[in-house]
Length: 96
Ligand SMILES: [Zn+2]
Image (cartoon, rainbow, N blue to C red):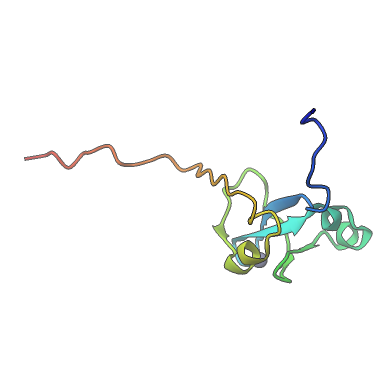
């Protein structure tokens, strides 16, 4: 068997977009990103219904939208949560 073809054809790709309006990272499915109406107005409807005005990609993601996380169809499979934030646990508490 080859693992090349994706077996999850019924699960849409979900992207995370941070909105400049509420500074939250919302989930938007790929079909919405390509939708003509979304391209026209430059806003994308997130899973939670929020219209996302995307923040510049150079900016860090905002706090995740809880409602979007709840509704994310891909979240039930696996959650490879990768925090881009570096750990600060450098044990600097040893100052006597
Ligand atoms: Zn949301």
